[in-house]
Length: 152
Image (cartoon, rainbow, N blue to C red; front, side, top):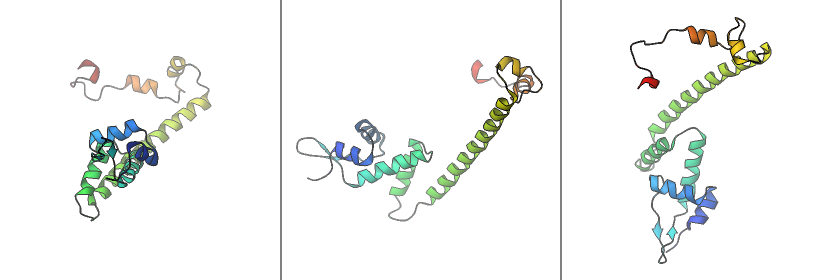
């Protein structure tokens, strides 16, 4: 019986053994065969699967999303998964929305630095405060009839 042992797979994929076993328990990686001595023996493609999982995580996909992508791709018999295109577009939209939010945050922080804000409470009470604390505090709740997360 041939194959790669756990340490070899983990090293080749750049993950630790705990990560390898966790992915196996989650079903992201198929349970390997065992040697006569009981050692896990993974096929060489396990390294590729691990690298794909890590790359997808770096792109912002959660492990649940990665599992869906791996499952969908495994049932196509070599045909491209149309779901990957849709999921990638959705993730791109999510990332672009986060970038927009971060740009607003960065601009507000730049304005706070330029205004010389040193004290959060003092700055919040000033009309020239670039951080919109006063407008946030004075804004009415979006839905006064619905309980907020703190009151549940």
